[in-house]
Length: 343
Image 1 (cartoon, rainbow, N blue to C red):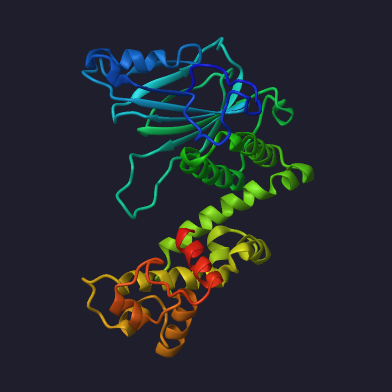
Image 2 (image 1 turned 90 degrees about the vertical axis):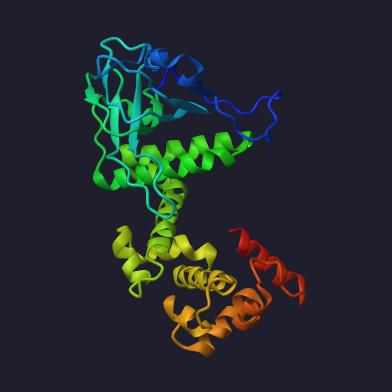
């Protein structure tokens, strides 16, 4: 998935505006050439890394897109390719000696559905490897072999580590477009620490990787909560079993947002809020509240007002959404709701 070895990690130079949004190191698309030439261009992207060949004798077109992010001494790539299968084989003498974490992705899922990713793999470009692409899109993280924790010729990724690394790669993929140049050294350091903890576990490596590991768990937990928000079984103990983490770990991760129970309750309150301001939803307030687990009307009304500053009936009557109708009672209260609305 890469056409050049990663560059050494550097701090933002004087010529680089650290506040500018991070840009792709490489972005290219096969649409720049005629359809009959598109697969050949796609093949050339991987020169010096791997041999790529089509499974069909003729490929009338091969619309593909590649974006590459330079993260210090790491390189992160997203490849979007059509459904046409193609072969991939490592070269006997590649131009670069790197490990590569590879995550197959499907096409973008329908709105509201979870992304069903493929099995995470770790390969060295210098090791023999051949496969047929089974997914259309791919994420790949290229890691230089000279990092201190990658000196071994054989590295196995255990299932627990696969889960962490898969979630982290998805989180990184979503986060990169919003990063600034100044964030690169911190992201590179956090990613390297996480890789060390997952690929060569030790007490020191795990301690260094605690923050990115917890960020990955928090990301997976928030997606699990969103998926099961209407499930009456959704509670801290159920979430621990679903995520495979201890209660103490879960509580520590959710502590900055008020705790896991508070987080679940807040997300459910937001669901009721969205329904209340929807003019096409004519259900009663109590029916909406019960859908999201609030069975006692007075308790629900009290929690809603504490969270958003107005009662459920006022929210419905005023068509209130977000913080547009927050009443100016005091600055801290308004700021709190604004921060909640943006989080």
